[in-house]
Image (spheres, rainbow, N blue to C red):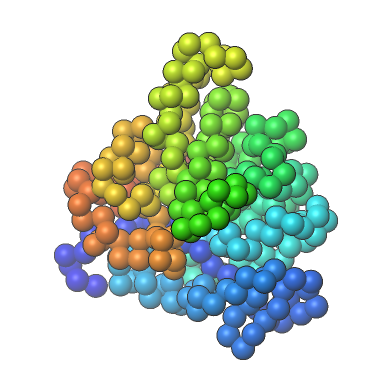
Length: 330
């Protein structure tokens, strides 16, 4: 590794498909070709997703010390019923733990089936009992209209709070038919879904009431930073239902962490101002093209101070806060 490349202490947003052909034999909706899985009709062809060693190689080339990995959104499977969703989550999580076990620099973020709150609680409870504290889940349920501020999720927040868990919220797209062209389900729908989740968590008071959870928003928090002022203006002017007491949006949002994937230095500066420069972490979205596949090139126009925070100071602070050492159990 060239000496000119600065070290990146932690990547909080990397993906992996942990399943093998043998593990999905007879499983409805899942097939296997010679080279890749097909899940509910989606061809998961990206070879890197199946090979932890390829992630390690990318980390070596880019000076990344450690990565926390989760399954990609194509494996969320929102159509499953509660029993099926729980069984699927257990299969994914066992496979992810197994697949990362031989790599001290990789830690699994276990999948929570958010589309069924009771199933998410059970999956979290079982994982926590085994010493796991790193989790990832979809940023809500656009298809059913279920919101993260709904009372059904209260047991999940209580469980994660007690465990002092880290939770990555990742968008799964959107159901709005107006987004059907120009790849807008990903490019615009994802950031919007993340902002909706953040609005519900801040404006409901959930974030303030469960201060032991570290919630990280993917992709720079989506569009939340740009609308936070408008949301608080609604609270300040007493728009109906916007303020329930406690912290207002601009204060509560600083409890979130966000990754640095914005693809624009000015936008990243806005994100750092809105959430706090100490709340921005490095994320790559490896191995997808919409991520930071060449982080030192793609972040070169970001101020040196913020780059240092993202790559070193902030992840070190997060690891200390969570009580995690490199290679230790998560």
